[in-house]
Image (cartoon, rainbow, N blue to C red; front, side):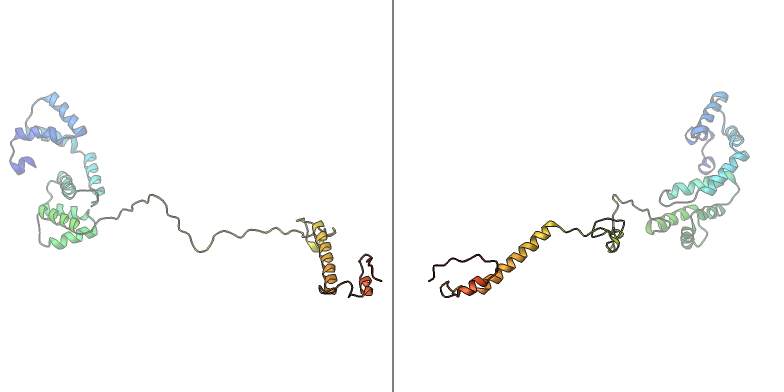
Length: 244
C-alpha cells in the first residue's frame, strides 16, 4: 500500500519493514536479513506471502476480524477502522472499497451503523465514513455504555417494620417457680413471704390506734370524761386517778 499509494521506491519500502514488523515478525525479519543480506522489494514480498499467506494465517485473521466488535468506550475510531481495513485488504486484495466499508460498518452495531448510513446516503469514501462515525460518537451517546461506579460504603436502609421475632416467654408456676407445671396443677403449698406477714400486722395495729383516737376528742379532759367510758375500752391498762 505504501509503494502503490505514495509511489515510494523499493529501497525506502524495504527500510520501512523494520518499523512495520513487531514481535515475532520483527525477529523473523532480522533473521532473514542476516541470512540473505540486502534484497529488493519483490523478493521480500514473495517471502512475506510465503510466511504468512498460508491457511492458518488466513483463519487467524478471519477470526480476528469477526471478534473485533467496536466499543466506543475503549476503541479509537480512526485506529480501529484502519486496522479492520488492513485485515480485509490482506485477506481479499481484490475487494472493492465500498464492500470493505460495508463489512466494517456491520461490526459497529445496529445503532451506530444506522446513524452512519443516515449521514452518508450517497456512496462515500473511507474518510467520509470515519468522519461520520466520529461525529455520531462524540456528539451523541450512541454506542456508549453506562459504567456503574461502586460505592465506597454500603448504605443500610432501615424499614418501618422490625424484622426481629418476638421473644418466647417461658411459662412458670407462680406458686413454686417451676417450669414443669402450672399453678393449677401445683401440689406444693403457697409460700407466704415473711415481709408480707409483718406488713399485715402493722396495718392491723395502726387501724386499732386510729379507732381509739376517733373515740376520744382533743377538747375532752379526764375530769369531764366519765370513768366508765375509760375502763370500757379494751386493750387499755388501768387508769389511776386521784378523783374522790
